[in-house]
Amino acid sequence: MENNADVFKLYSNLPLDFLNPEVILPFPRPGVFLPEYPDITLIIETLPLQLLYSAYMQGSFPWYNEDEGEPVIFYNPHIRFCLQMEKLHIPKSIDRFLKHCPYTFTMDKAFTRVMEECRNVERKGQNGSWIGQQMIHAYTDFHKKGYAHSIEAWQDGELAGGLYGVLIGSVFFGESMFTKKDNSSKAAFAVFARSFLECGGKLIDSQVYTDNIARYGASNISRTAFLHLEKELLYKPLEKDLLTQFNENSKKITNPAARITGPTSANPVI
Image (cartoon, rainbow, N blue to C red; front, side, top):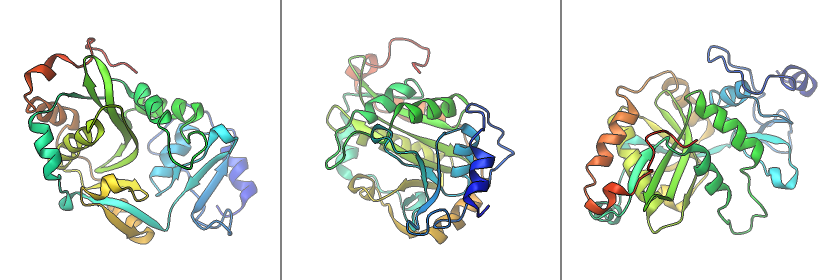
């Protein structure tokens, strides 16, 4: 799959909401599609689920600014920022905060709302957001298929912070997070990361460097090293149910005031 015309011919008319996990659409190698941009694997106009799933299975992910009219651009960076779970370190400040935490934590209760909050985060030096309506629609469908997940922090019935990403095998691909109340997303990530590790999770891919994830033990690795890890771990299922473990760990955070501040409905708020 080295010819640009072949790629467009094969992928441009894919149905948006169809996904067969047994099918992995081949991606061009990084730099083949646009030699002057060696981290780009593919550029296309649509974001169908089959292509999105295939991207993660081959080390690529979409990253583009829909607000500025960019097409769908898939990247596979030559340097990848990852947290290998045996190196997980929860900072003492976060552990202290969790002992007197004002938040409750849920998983998959408000996926689309988490994405929308991430979209609204103001980022220095960035005009608009890379999380556009096209991406929200695609990842919400991905969530409904069981691959994309959200972690929420609640206070007084309102979202205080959260994050979302994609889970395949024993790899979690972190996409974005937001914070409206102090330490909310940091605490939510800590609860999730511990739960993920206890379920046999092996790798959290942060894609590019962030100070926040660095404090938990993440480091840069080469694309070759990342693809080697991914090739093994994407087909290695978790040993325990992640939602069950996450809920158990959330209940251990025993601030009485926080116990009544989650979503009022038992049903997920997509």
